[in-house]
Amino acid sequence: MKTAPALYNPTVLDHFLNPRNVGDLPHPDALGQAGEPACGDTMRLTLRIQRGKIIDARFRVFGCAAAIASSSMATQLLKGKTLAQARRFTNRQIVTALGGLPPAKIQCSVLAAQALQAALQDYDTRHPATRTPRRSKS
Amino acid sequence: MPQVYLDHQSATPVLPEVLEAMRPWFTDFFGNPSSLHRHGLLARDAIAKAREQIAAFINAESPEEIIFTSDGTESANLAVKGTAAARQRDGNHIIITATEHPSIIASVENLQAGGITSSRVPVDTTGIVDPEEIIAATTGNTILIAVHHANHEIGAIQPLAQIGQIARQRAITFFVDAEASAGWLPIDVRAWGAGLVSFSPHRFYGPKGVGILYKNCRTRLSPILHGGDQENGLRPGVENVPAIVGAGLAAEIAAREMERRHAHCSKLQSRLWDALRAKIPDLKLNGPAPGSMRHPANLNISAKDTEGEAQLLLCDMRGIAVASGSSCVTRSKKISHVLAAIGLDPALARANIIMSLGQATTEEDIDYVIQTYPEIISKLRSLSL
Image 1 (tube, each protein chain N blue to C red):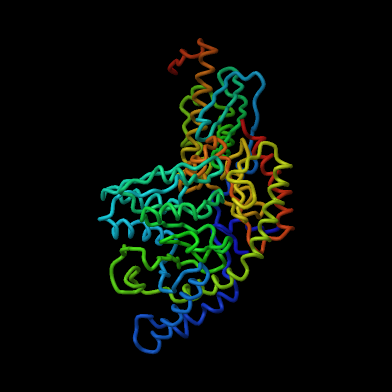
Image 2: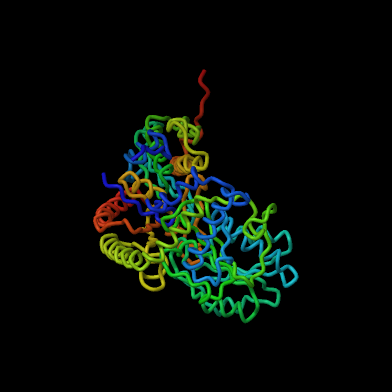
Protein backbone atom coordinates (compact mmCIF):
# COMPACT_ATOMS: atom_id res chain seq x y z
CA MET A 1 0.00 0.00 0.00
CA LYS A 2 1.13 3.53 -0.74
CA THR A 3 2.11 5.58 2.28
CA ALA A 4 -0.80 7.88 3.00
CA PRO A 5 -0.31 11.49 4.07
CA ALA A 6 -1.25 12.02 7.71
CA LEU A 7 -4.06 14.20 9.01
CA TYR A 8 -1.87 15.35 11.90
CA ASN A 9 1.86 15.89 12.37
CA PRO A 10 3.94 13.29 14.28
CA THR A 11 3.94 15.28 17.55
CA VAL A 12 0.13 15.55 17.57
CA LEU A 13 -0.17 11.87 16.69
CA ASP A 14 2.25 10.93 19.45
CA HIS A 15 0.25 12.83 22.08
CA PHE A 16 -2.99 11.39 20.68
CA LEU A 17 -1.73 7.82 20.74
CA ASN A 18 0.27 8.10 23.98
CA PRO A 19 -1.43 10.83 25.96
CA ARG A 20 0.55 12.01 29.00
CA ASN A 21 -0.97 12.64 32.43
CA VAL A 22 -4.34 11.01 31.90
CA GLY A 23 -6.61 10.78 34.92
CA ASP A 24 -7.73 12.79 37.93
CA LEU A 25 -5.44 13.92 40.75
CA PRO A 26 -6.88 12.85 44.10
CA HIS A 27 -7.82 15.87 46.19
CA PRO A 28 -6.56 18.38 43.64
CA ASP A 29 -5.67 21.94 44.58
CA ALA A 30 -7.55 23.12 41.52
CA LEU A 31 -10.15 21.58 39.23
CA GLY A 32 -11.36 23.10 36.01
CA GLN A 33 -13.75 21.87 33.39
CA ALA A 34 -14.45 23.34 29.97
CA GLY A 35 -16.58 22.58 26.98
CA GLU A 36 -20.16 21.72 26.35
CA PRO A 37 -20.96 18.05 26.76
CA ALA A 38 -24.21 18.57 24.89
CA CYS A 39 -22.50 19.30 21.60
CA GLY A 40 -18.74 19.25 21.65
CA ASP A 41 -15.58 18.31 23.43
CA THR A 42 -15.28 18.37 27.20
CA MET A 43 -12.10 18.48 29.23
CA ARG A 44 -11.43 18.21 32.95
CA LEU A 45 -8.12 19.37 34.36
CA THR A 46 -6.86 18.79 37.90
CA LEU A 47 -3.77 20.53 39.28
CA ARG A 48 -1.45 20.08 42.25
CA ILE A 49 -0.12 23.49 43.29
CA GLN A 50 2.63 24.09 45.84
CA ARG A 51 4.23 27.40 46.77
CA GLY A 52 2.66 29.17 43.83
CA LYS A 53 3.79 26.59 41.34
CA ILE A 54 1.98 23.86 39.37
CA ILE A 55 3.79 20.67 40.27
CA ASP A 56 1.42 18.15 38.72
CA ALA A 57 -1.47 18.08 36.25
CA ARG A 58 -3.90 15.43 35.03
CA PHE A 59 -6.65 15.51 32.44
CA ARG A 60 -9.63 13.66 31.09
CA VAL A 61 -11.22 14.53 27.77
CA PHE A 62 -14.11 13.62 25.54
CA GLY A 63 -13.02 14.80 22.15
CA CYS A 64 -11.29 14.28 18.87
CA ALA A 65 -7.61 13.49 18.31
CA ALA A 66 -6.68 17.17 18.39
CA ALA A 67 -8.48 17.66 21.69
CA ILE A 68 -6.74 14.68 23.23
CA ALA A 69 -3.31 15.78 21.97
CA SER A 70 -3.89 19.39 23.08
CA SER A 71 -4.94 18.29 26.56
CA SER A 72 -1.94 16.02 26.88
CA MET A 73 0.47 18.71 25.69
CA ALA A 74 -1.15 21.30 27.98
CA THR A 75 -0.52 19.17 31.06
CA GLN A 76 3.11 18.74 30.02
CA LEU A 77 3.58 22.46 29.48
CA LEU A 78 1.87 23.43 32.73
CA LYS A 79 4.07 21.38 35.03
CA GLY A 80 6.61 23.70 36.62
CA LYS A 81 4.79 26.89 35.67
CA THR A 82 4.15 29.50 38.34
CA LEU A 83 0.57 30.66 38.85
CA ALA A 84 1.47 33.96 37.22
CA GLN A 85 2.80 32.14 34.16
CA ALA A 86 -0.25 29.87 34.11
CA ARG A 87 -2.57 32.90 34.11
CA ARG A 88 -0.86 34.14 30.96
CA PHE A 89 -0.97 30.70 29.33
CA THR A 90 -2.91 30.61 26.03
CA ASN A 91 -3.87 27.98 23.51
CA ARG A 92 -1.23 29.41 21.16
CA GLN A 93 1.46 27.89 23.36
CA ILE A 94 -0.19 24.48 23.00
CA VAL A 95 -0.48 24.81 19.22
CA THR A 96 3.15 25.91 18.94
CA ALA A 97 4.39 23.07 21.13
CA LEU A 98 2.39 20.62 19.05
CA GLY A 99 3.98 21.97 15.89
CA GLY A 100 0.66 23.23 14.56
CA LEU A 101 -2.91 21.98 14.15
CA PRO A 102 -5.24 22.03 11.12
CA PRO A 103 -7.19 25.35 11.08
CA ALA A 104 -10.50 23.69 11.92
CA LYS A 105 -8.89 22.09 14.97
CA ILE A 106 -7.45 25.17 16.66
CA GLN A 107 -10.66 25.30 18.67
CA CYS A 108 -9.64 22.03 20.33
CA SER A 109 -6.58 23.71 21.87
CA VAL A 110 -8.78 26.53 23.19
CA LEU A 111 -10.61 23.90 25.23
CA ALA A 112 -7.47 23.08 27.21
CA ALA A 113 -6.72 26.76 27.82
CA GLN A 114 -10.27 27.29 29.02
CA ALA A 115 -10.07 24.32 31.37
CA LEU A 116 -6.87 25.81 32.82
CA GLN A 117 -8.46 29.20 33.41
CA ALA A 118 -11.43 27.48 35.06
CA ALA A 119 -9.00 25.56 37.27
CA LEU A 120 -7.17 28.75 38.25
CA GLN A 121 -10.46 30.37 39.10
CA ASP A 122 -11.28 27.38 41.26
CA TYR A 123 -7.91 27.74 42.99
CA ASP A 124 -8.51 31.46 43.61
CA THR A 125 -11.88 30.70 45.13
CA ARG A 126 -10.25 28.22 47.48
CA HIS A 127 -7.26 30.47 48.25
CA PRO A 128 -8.44 34.06 48.21
CA ALA A 129 -5.12 35.22 49.70
CA THR A 130 -2.86 34.17 46.85
CA ARG A 131 -4.83 36.22 44.41
CA THR A 132 -3.59 39.70 45.33
CA PRO A 133 0.17 39.56 45.68
CA ARG A 134 1.45 40.44 42.29
CA ARG A 135 4.31 42.50 43.57
CA SER A 136 6.42 44.23 41.07
CA LYS A 137 9.98 43.15 41.14
CA SER A 138 12.21 45.94 42.22
CA MET B 1 -0.98 -5.46 9.64
CA PRO B 2 -4.29 -6.47 8.06
CA GLN B 3 -5.96 -3.86 5.85
CA VAL B 4 -9.73 -3.90 6.25
CA TYR B 5 -11.65 -1.45 4.10
CA LEU B 6 -15.07 -0.76 5.60
CA ASP B 7 -16.03 2.42 3.76
CA HIS B 8 -17.74 1.04 0.67
CA GLN B 9 -20.44 3.67 0.91
CA SER B 10 -17.80 6.28 0.10
CA ALA B 11 -16.15 4.39 -2.72
CA THR B 12 -15.70 0.89 -4.09
CA PRO B 13 -12.77 -0.39 -6.18
CA VAL B 14 -13.41 -0.46 -9.92
CA LEU B 15 -13.78 -4.10 -11.04
CA PRO B 16 -10.89 -5.28 -13.26
CA GLU B 17 -13.28 -6.16 -16.11
CA VAL B 18 -14.88 -2.71 -15.82
CA LEU B 19 -11.49 -1.03 -16.00
CA GLU B 20 -10.59 -3.18 -19.02
CA ALA B 21 -13.81 -2.16 -20.77
CA MET B 22 -13.07 1.51 -20.05
CA ARG B 23 -9.43 1.52 -21.12
CA PRO B 24 -9.76 1.70 -24.96
CA TRP B 25 -12.13 4.66 -24.66
CA PHE B 26 -9.27 6.73 -23.25
CA THR B 27 -6.76 5.87 -25.95
CA ASP B 28 -7.89 4.04 -29.08
CA PHE B 29 -11.44 5.37 -29.27
CA PHE B 30 -11.07 8.87 -27.97
CA GLY B 31 -13.55 10.59 -30.29
CA ASN B 32 -16.04 13.19 -29.12
CA PRO B 33 -19.53 11.63 -29.24
CA SER B 34 -20.87 14.79 -30.88
CA SER B 35 -18.50 14.44 -33.84
CA LEU B 36 -20.07 13.10 -37.04
CA HIS B 37 -17.09 11.10 -38.27
CA ARG B 38 -16.45 7.47 -37.38
CA HIS B 39 -14.53 8.34 -34.21
CA GLY B 40 -17.50 10.27 -32.89
CA LEU B 41 -20.06 7.70 -34.00
CA LEU B 42 -18.17 4.92 -32.23
CA ALA B 43 -18.19 6.88 -28.98
CA ARG B 44 -21.86 7.72 -29.42
CA ASP B 45 -22.62 4.04 -29.90
CA ALA B 46 -20.74 3.14 -26.73
CA ILE B 47 -22.85 5.62 -24.76
CA ALA B 48 -26.03 4.19 -26.29
CA LYS B 49 -25.04 0.71 -25.13
CA ALA B 50 -24.33 1.95 -21.59
CA ARG B 51 -27.71 3.68 -21.60
CA GLU B 52 -29.37 0.36 -22.37
CA GLN B 53 -27.44 -1.42 -19.64
CA ILE B 54 -28.44 1.22 -17.10
CA ALA B 55 -32.08 1.24 -18.23
CA ALA B 56 -32.28 -2.53 -17.76
CA PHE B 57 -30.64 -2.24 -14.33
CA ILE B 58 -33.44 -0.02 -12.97
CA ASN B 59 -36.39 -1.31 -15.03
CA ALA B 60 -36.76 1.91 -17.03
CA GLU B 61 -39.18 1.91 -19.96
CA SER B 62 -36.59 3.23 -22.37
CA PRO B 63 -32.85 3.97 -22.55
CA GLU B 64 -33.86 7.53 -23.48
CA GLU B 65 -34.80 7.99 -19.84
CA ILE B 66 -31.17 7.81 -18.70
CA ILE B 67 -29.20 11.06 -18.31
CA PHE B 68 -25.48 10.87 -17.64
CA THR B 69 -24.15 13.58 -15.32
CA SER B 70 -20.80 13.96 -13.60
CA ASP B 71 -21.76 12.66 -10.14
CA GLY B 72 -24.47 12.28 -7.55
CA THR B 73 -24.33 15.89 -6.45
CA GLU B 74 -24.92 17.09 -10.00
CA SER B 75 -27.79 14.62 -10.41
CA ALA B 76 -29.41 15.94 -7.22
CA ASN B 77 -28.96 19.56 -8.29
CA LEU B 78 -30.42 18.81 -11.71
CA ALA B 79 -33.38 16.92 -10.24
CA VAL B 80 -34.26 19.59 -7.68
CA LYS B 81 -33.44 22.79 -9.56
CA GLY B 82 -34.49 21.38 -12.93
CA THR B 83 -37.92 20.44 -11.57
CA ALA B 84 -38.39 23.81 -9.89
CA ALA B 85 -37.59 25.56 -13.19
CA ALA B 86 -39.69 23.27 -15.38
CA ARG B 87 -42.70 23.38 -13.06
CA GLN B 88 -42.63 26.96 -11.86
CA ARG B 89 -46.12 27.58 -13.19
CA ASP B 90 -47.45 24.58 -11.24
CA GLY B 91 -46.23 25.72 -7.84
CA ASN B 92 -43.30 26.56 -5.64
CA HIS B 93 -43.31 24.03 -2.81
CA ILE B 94 -40.87 21.15 -2.32
CA ILE B 95 -41.08 18.35 0.25
CA ILE B 96 -37.98 16.53 1.46
CA THR B 97 -37.30 14.40 4.52
CA ALA B 98 -35.12 15.60 7.39
CA THR B 99 -32.46 13.02 6.55
CA GLU B 100 -31.77 13.71 2.88
CA HIS B 101 -28.23 13.97 1.57
CA PRO B 102 -26.65 17.45 1.83
CA SER B 103 -26.71 17.80 -1.98
CA ILE B 104 -30.51 17.72 -1.90
CA ILE B 105 -30.95 19.87 1.21
CA ALA B 106 -28.53 22.48 -0.15
CA SER B 107 -30.15 22.48 -3.60
CA VAL B 108 -33.55 23.17 -2.04
CA GLU B 109 -32.11 25.88 0.22
CA ASN B 110 -30.45 27.47 -2.79
CA LEU B 111 -33.87 27.84 -4.44
CA GLN B 112 -35.34 29.75 -1.52
CA ALA B 113 -34.07 33.08 -2.80
CA GLY B 114 -36.05 32.42 -5.97
CA GLY B 115 -39.30 31.99 -4.05
CA ILE B 116 -39.32 28.24 -3.48
CA THR B 117 -40.66 27.13 -0.11
CA SER B 118 -39.98 23.73 1.40
CA SER B 119 -41.07 21.32 4.10
CA ARG B 120 -38.75 18.92 5.88
CA VAL B 121 -40.74 15.90 6.93
CA PRO B 122 -39.53 14.26 10.16
CA VAL B 123 -38.46 10.62 10.42
CA ASP B 124 -38.94 8.19 13.31
CA THR B 125 -36.16 7.15 15.70
CA THR B 126 -34.94 4.53 13.22
CA GLY B 127 -34.87 7.06 10.38
CA ILE B 128 -37.95 5.92 8.47
CA VAL B 129 -40.50 8.42 7.19
CA ASP B 130 -44.23 7.91 7.70
CA PRO B 131 -46.06 8.40 4.36
CA GLU B 132 -48.87 10.08 6.32
CA GLU B 133 -46.39 12.83 7.22
CA ILE B 134 -45.70 13.33 3.52
CA ILE B 135 -49.43 13.64 2.84
CA ALA B 136 -49.74 16.15 5.67
CA ALA B 137 -46.96 18.26 4.16
CA THR B 138 -48.44 18.44 0.66
CA THR B 139 -50.07 21.66 -0.46
CA GLY B 140 -51.74 22.69 -3.70
CA ASN B 141 -48.40 24.23 -4.64
CA THR B 142 -46.22 21.15 -4.10
CA ILE B 143 -44.26 20.31 -7.24
CA LEU B 144 -41.63 17.92 -5.91
CA ILE B 145 -41.23 15.23 -3.24
CA ALA B 146 -37.62 14.12 -2.75
CA VAL B 147 -36.93 11.02 -0.63
CA HIS B 148 -33.93 8.72 -0.51
CA HIS B 149 -34.15 4.95 -0.98
CA ALA B 150 -31.59 3.88 1.67
CA ASN B 151 -30.16 6.52 3.97
CA HIS B 152 -26.53 7.44 3.29
CA GLU B 153 -25.62 7.36 7.00
CA ILE B 154 -27.94 5.01 8.84
CA GLY B 155 -29.13 2.72 6.04
CA ALA B 156 -32.86 3.17 6.73
CA ILE B 157 -34.98 2.03 3.77
CA GLN B 158 -37.96 4.23 2.94
CA PRO B 159 -41.48 3.14 1.88
CA LEU B 160 -41.05 4.44 -1.65
CA ALA B 161 -43.96 2.73 -3.40
CA GLN B 162 -46.38 4.34 -0.95
CA ILE B 163 -44.80 7.75 -1.32
CA GLY B 164 -44.77 7.36 -5.10
CA GLN B 165 -48.51 6.76 -5.05
CA ILE B 166 -49.06 9.88 -2.95
CA ALA B 167 -47.06 11.88 -5.47
CA ARG B 168 -48.82 10.40 -8.49
CA GLN B 169 -52.29 11.06 -7.10
CA ARG B 170 -51.38 14.73 -6.73
CA ALA B 171 -49.37 15.13 -9.94
CA ILE B 172 -46.25 15.88 -7.89
CA THR B 173 -42.84 14.93 -9.32
CA PHE B 174 -41.26 12.17 -7.22
CA PHE B 175 -37.46 12.18 -7.00
CA VAL B 176 -35.69 9.23 -5.36
CA ASP B 177 -32.06 9.51 -4.26
CA ALA B 178 -30.82 5.94 -4.70
CA GLU B 179 -27.14 6.80 -4.32
CA ALA B 180 -26.63 4.68 -1.21
CA SER B 181 -28.72 1.72 -2.35
CA ALA B 182 -27.95 1.22 -6.05
CA GLY B 183 -26.03 -2.00 -6.55
CA TRP B 184 -27.08 -3.36 -3.15
CA LEU B 185 -30.86 -3.26 -3.29
CA PRO B 186 -33.04 -3.69 -6.39
CA ILE B 187 -34.11 -0.45 -8.04
CA ASP B 188 -37.43 -0.52 -9.83
CA VAL B 189 -38.29 2.97 -10.98
CA ARG B 190 -41.69 1.89 -12.23
CA ALA B 191 -42.70 0.10 -9.03
CA TRP B 192 -41.76 3.25 -7.12
CA GLY B 193 -43.67 5.51 -9.51
CA ALA B 194 -40.61 7.74 -9.57
CA GLY B 195 -40.18 10.54 -12.07
CA LEU B 196 -36.52 11.02 -11.20
CA VAL B 197 -33.96 8.66 -9.64
CA SER B 198 -30.27 9.37 -9.05
CA PHE B 199 -27.43 6.93 -8.44
CA SER B 200 -23.69 6.65 -9.03
CA PRO B 201 -21.56 3.72 -10.22
CA HIS B 202 -18.66 4.38 -7.86
CA ARG B 203 -20.87 2.89 -5.15
CA PHE B 204 -21.11 -0.42 -7.00
CA TYR B 205 -17.64 -1.14 -8.38
CA GLY B 206 -17.80 1.35 -11.24
CA PRO B 207 -15.79 4.54 -11.78
CA LYS B 208 -16.07 7.99 -10.21
CA GLY B 209 -16.69 10.97 -12.48
CA VAL B 210 -20.06 9.84 -13.75
CA GLY B 211 -23.51 10.06 -12.21
CA ILE B 212 -26.88 8.91 -13.46
CA LEU B 213 -30.25 10.60 -13.35
CA TYR B 214 -33.22 8.59 -14.53
CA LYS B 215 -35.96 10.83 -15.86
CA ASN B 216 -39.30 9.27 -16.73
CA CYS B 217 -40.26 10.22 -20.30
CA ARG B 218 -43.33 12.07 -19.01
CA THR B 219 -41.49 13.98 -16.25
CA ARG B 220 -40.75 17.62 -16.98
CA LEU B 221 -37.24 18.85 -16.28
CA SER B 222 -35.19 21.89 -17.30
CA PRO B 223 -31.40 21.88 -17.63
CA ILE B 224 -29.29 23.69 -15.04
CA LEU B 225 -26.26 23.87 -17.33
CA HIS B 226 -26.60 25.49 -20.71
CA GLY B 227 -24.75 24.71 -23.89
CA GLY B 228 -25.01 21.96 -26.47
CA ASP B 229 -27.67 19.31 -26.94
CA GLN B 230 -25.94 16.36 -25.27
CA GLU B 231 -28.26 14.21 -23.17
CA ASN B 232 -31.27 15.74 -24.94
CA GLY B 233 -30.12 19.17 -23.89
CA LEU B 234 -30.62 18.28 -20.23
CA ARG B 235 -26.92 17.91 -19.53
CA PRO B 236 -24.82 19.77 -22.07
CA GLY B 237 -21.07 19.20 -22.08
CA VAL B 238 -18.74 16.57 -23.51
CA GLU B 239 -19.63 13.14 -22.19
CA ASN B 240 -17.15 11.23 -20.01
CA VAL B 241 -17.15 8.29 -22.41
CA PRO B 242 -14.82 5.90 -20.54
CA ALA B 243 -16.67 6.43 -17.26
CA ILE B 244 -20.05 6.01 -18.95
CA VAL B 245 -18.87 2.74 -20.53
CA GLY B 246 -17.69 1.63 -17.08
CA ALA B 247 -21.00 2.68 -15.51
CA GLY B 248 -22.94 0.53 -17.98
CA LEU B 249 -20.89 -2.58 -17.34
CA ALA B 250 -20.80 -2.04 -13.57
CA ALA B 251 -24.62 -1.84 -13.61
CA GLU B 252 -24.93 -4.99 -15.70
CA ILE B 253 -22.63 -6.87 -13.31
CA ALA B 254 -24.40 -5.41 -10.27
CA ALA B 255 -27.75 -6.71 -11.52
CA ARG B 256 -26.23 -10.16 -11.91
CA GLU B 257 -24.35 -10.13 -8.60
CA MET B 258 -26.82 -8.27 -6.43
CA GLU B 259 -28.34 -11.24 -4.63
CA ARG B 260 -24.93 -12.66 -3.85
CA ARG B 261 -23.56 -9.31 -2.67
CA HIS B 262 -26.66 -8.71 -0.58
CA ALA B 263 -26.54 -12.12 1.09
CA HIS B 264 -22.78 -11.91 1.69
CA CYS B 265 -22.89 -8.45 3.26
CA SER B 266 -26.01 -8.92 5.33
CA LYS B 267 -24.55 -12.08 6.85
CA LEU B 268 -21.33 -10.24 7.80
CA GLN B 269 -23.32 -7.21 8.94
CA SER B 270 -25.27 -9.31 11.46
CA ARG B 271 -22.16 -11.13 12.59
CA LEU B 272 -20.32 -7.85 13.15
CA TRP B 273 -23.17 -6.16 14.98
CA ASP B 274 -23.96 -9.15 17.19
CA ALA B 275 -20.30 -9.55 18.21
CA LEU B 276 -19.65 -5.84 18.83
CA ARG B 277 -22.84 -5.49 20.80
CA ALA B 278 -21.83 -8.46 22.97
CA LYS B 279 -18.30 -7.14 23.55
CA ILE B 280 -18.86 -3.40 24.02
CA PRO B 281 -21.11 -2.06 26.78
CA ASP B 282 -23.23 1.00 25.92
CA LEU B 283 -22.99 0.53 22.17
CA LYS B 284 -25.92 1.90 20.21
CA LEU B 285 -26.99 0.96 16.70
CA ASN B 286 -28.27 3.95 14.75
CA GLY B 287 -31.00 3.20 12.24
CA PRO B 288 -33.14 0.09 11.83
CA ALA B 289 -32.02 -3.34 13.06
CA PRO B 290 -30.26 -5.46 10.42
CA GLY B 291 -32.99 -6.89 8.21
CA SER B 292 -35.42 -5.80 5.53
CA MET B 293 -35.57 -2.18 6.67
CA ARG B 294 -31.81 -1.62 6.61
CA HIS B 295 -29.12 -1.40 3.94
CA PRO B 296 -27.40 -4.81 3.99
CA ALA B 297 -23.87 -3.39 4.07
CA ASN B 298 -24.25 -0.48 6.49
CA LEU B 299 -23.55 -0.44 10.20
CA ASN B 300 -23.79 2.89 12.02
CA ILE B 301 -22.89 2.72 15.70
CA SER B 302 -22.25 5.06 18.61
CA ALA B 303 -20.00 3.99 21.47
CA LYS B 304 -20.77 6.20 24.46
CA ASP B 305 -17.93 8.45 25.75
CA THR B 306 -15.78 8.15 22.62
CA GLU B 307 -15.53 10.63 19.80
CA GLY B 308 -15.99 9.65 16.15
CA GLU B 309 -12.84 11.13 14.64
CA ALA B 310 -10.65 9.73 17.41
CA GLN B 311 -12.19 6.30 16.77
CA LEU B 312 -11.68 6.70 13.03
CA LEU B 313 -8.01 7.58 13.44
CA LEU B 314 -7.30 4.75 15.82
CA CYS B 315 -9.09 2.35 13.46
CA ASP B 316 -6.98 3.67 10.58
CA MET B 317 -3.79 3.10 12.60
CA ARG B 318 -4.86 -0.52 13.00
CA GLY B 319 -5.59 -0.84 9.27
CA ILE B 320 -9.37 -0.47 9.49
CA ALA B 321 -10.92 2.19 7.24
CA VAL B 322 -14.25 3.51 8.52
CA ALA B 323 -16.28 6.73 8.22
CA SER B 324 -17.87 9.03 10.75
CA GLY B 325 -21.01 11.01 10.06
CA SER B 326 -20.22 13.67 12.60
CA SER B 327 -16.62 14.65 12.50
CA CYS B 328 -14.17 15.69 9.87
CA VAL B 329 -10.94 17.62 10.00
CA THR B 330 -12.07 20.11 7.40
CA ARG B 331 -15.61 20.61 8.62
CA SER B 332 -14.87 20.82 12.32
CA LYS B 333 -17.37 19.83 14.94
CA LYS B 334 -20.61 19.33 13.17
CA ILE B 335 -23.19 16.92 14.37
CA SER B 336 -24.74 14.86 11.60
CA HIS B 337 -28.17 16.21 10.67
CA VAL B 338 -29.30 12.62 10.14
CA LEU B 339 -28.43 11.62 13.71
CA ALA B 340 -30.02 14.82 15.00
CA ALA B 341 -33.19 13.99 13.03
CA ILE B 342 -33.54 10.55 14.66
CA GLY B 343 -33.30 12.27 18.03
CA LEU B 344 -29.93 10.86 19.02
CA ASP B 345 -28.31 12.45 22.06
CA PRO B 346 -25.67 14.92 20.76
CA ALA B 347 -22.84 13.25 22.70
CA LEU B 348 -23.80 9.91 21.12
CA ALA B 349 -23.99 11.61 17.74
CA ARG B 350 -20.39 12.77 18.21
CA ALA B 351 -19.50 9.18 19.15
CA ASN B 352 -20.61 7.90 15.80
CA ILE B 353 -18.87 5.65 13.31
CA ILE B 354 -20.05 4.13 10.02
CA MET B 355 -18.80 0.77 8.79
CA SER B 356 -19.87 -0.26 5.30
CA LEU B 357 -19.06 -3.69 3.94
CA GLY B 358 -18.38 -4.87 0.41
CA GLN B 359 -18.28 -7.99 -1.70
CA ALA B 360 -14.59 -8.55 -0.93
CA THR B 361 -15.01 -8.22 2.84
CA THR B 362 -14.16 -11.56 4.42
CA GLU B 363 -15.08 -13.27 7.67
CA GLU B 364 -11.44 -12.85 8.71
CA ASP B 365 -11.77 -9.10 8.12
CA ILE B 366 -14.83 -9.00 10.32
CA ASP B 367 -13.13 -11.10 13.02
CA TYR B 368 -10.20 -8.67 13.00
CA VAL B 369 -12.61 -5.75 13.52
CA ILE B 370 -14.44 -7.67 16.25
CA GLN B 371 -11.11 -8.15 18.01
CA THR B 372 -9.67 -4.67 17.41
CA TYR B 373 -12.56 -2.22 17.65
CA PRO B 374 -13.45 -3.00 21.30
CA GLU B 375 -9.80 -2.30 22.23
CA ILE B 376 -10.06 1.10 20.54
CA ILE B 377 -13.25 1.91 22.42
CA SER B 378 -11.67 0.83 25.74
CA LYS B 379 -8.67 3.03 25.08
CA LEU B 380 -10.75 6.11 24.32
CA ARG B 381 -13.08 5.47 27.23
CA SER B 382 -10.08 5.32 29.58
CA LEU B 383 -9.34 8.94 28.61
CA SER B 384 -12.90 10.17 28.85
CA LEU B 385 -14.65 11.96 31.65
